[in-house]
Length: 497
Ligand SMILES: [Zn+2]
Image 1 (cartoon, rainbow, N blue to C red):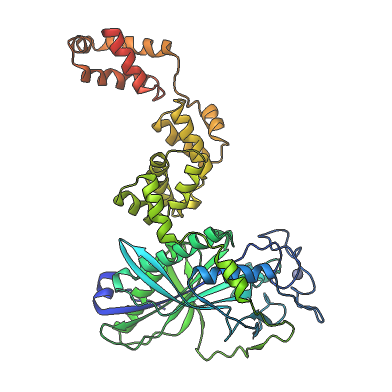
Image 2: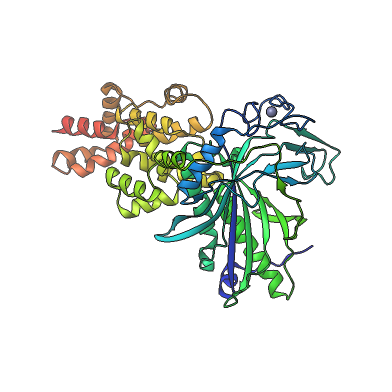
């Protein structure tokens, strides 16, 4: 089916979007939600399983207390009310990745509800209302083999791994987000990004989008400007990077507008997002009245967190993100503009971690926001996934401070680090990147440069120190950039004094 995509500028002139975001957070508990199996990412297929998470007859689930604690802390950090009493429910459906034929989730009694999160985009604050945050278990993972698309259609056979089945999840659901049309893609991205930072600060999940420990479902509908009734929505499933969240919103806005402009109606369905093209494709039709035959889980006792416990957990919350941001800006001495760039790049936690390794804040900022952000953008990945850790950035800057390398050579060290050539010191050794620290070779290169340009020596002797630049340039070239420019300058001026 061919799709007419309307250019974004035209979409925002005619339509208003309503966004809805459902974010699944995989908790980093030691064990699964209802059994004692290790809750680890990966591993040999079907090795972290037991009768309970395989749904064998007679197996009895027990709620993981640590998961409840994490759910409450997430709810409190999102300014939610915490239920005094709530239950799990069975969500009944048949799919091979859910061996029990139902998922243990929460339905009309979520553990946390009615909260909000303020997000900032280009200096404006938008309050995102949180409808609920509820506990559930993850499903297993299917792999469809032999087809062209990796999807079940056209596959020769499918494999299923239950290691992930039963890992605790928190699903965080927003109310419809109504923001200016042109801001919708950026607000969606900022919300998921700030939520991820909050989850990281709480320490309740690895928060790795690339490994699926945070996954976003992006709901979007359009309505003609001035219309108060929401349009029909599509639901793009399992979007797994911040950049993809933004692109998915943008693409769906263009696609919906194409259908509406042509007088058609948007199909209520799930969609798959394609990283390579930035497009979505049809998944399955989904009606609002989809009947999962929810009913309270009879094998689990209700969860009734005492008010004392809830207040105790409130005391363990990290600093509120807005306050933290203001405090760090002050501490680091960043200008408003610098801070805005840091924020937009999602670099604050990385800079904080680099500073904790002993790097000066401005140096940490320079590497993350200039050098490494450019590389992340080129590679189409998040800054945190660029292939360099805060510890490595700190090591590189320490080598610059020690004059083992300069900024230019440091860029080549980052090349080596990203290529997996070992530690910073090993990259320098292997690639021969260290600065020439011995004056001997520098003096020889200076003599050669001066001999080649005799008039320059006269200028410098005559007090024109700026003329030394040409000599420094020649020495840098002769040493393939491995000279300390400041030292070369000193040597030239000493020589011609
Ligand atoms: Zn198990």
